[in-house]
Image (cartoon, rainbow over all chains, first blue to last red; front, side, top):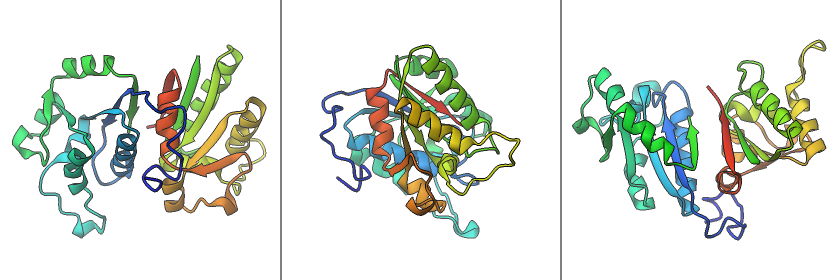
Length: 135
Length: 119
């Protein structure tokens, strides 16, 4: 647990307080480090027993696309980690419909079960959150 | 209101750190409290003691340091992001501290608003 939370003690005055965290991912998985480092925060948040949702918009939808092969660019393929989120009780994954369709993707192209939301529904989801982190 | 701040971009290349600083300063002037600034991604470079901008330019690192000292703001640099980019205790500016991502999550839980400054 110490490693997962970066060495901090869990007995801070956050205990028992549960907020709704939404992670908004807007960037392609490779080319910049945002996606990977976003995923690292998502995992840590789960260790704090918070109510976590993860959304994929714009090029961020590519983060959860099946069949990523990164050998040619000599970068670690971290996409299997999205499948591990379920084990951390992070099951609320959302993909924005417009971003998905613009890129010629469909629901069956994703490596994890996601809920597809229209831009309007995504906005409604954001309104229900306490903390939104955009990467 | 109690604010937490997240800075996701490095100094000078991007305006995120400047905007975050000006926001923090303005919030404090209005009587709000900034309890923590968390530096993540390239934002960790905002803590490098080796930063030496030209004399006629703003010193982003020292500006954060002073704001932190004057108003008791916890300036936290993410350990994983920092090590990846060569920021260690040896070159960390005084007033900053290196810690884990848990500090960011905690800031989200404890503050009334967590404000993200990034690309």
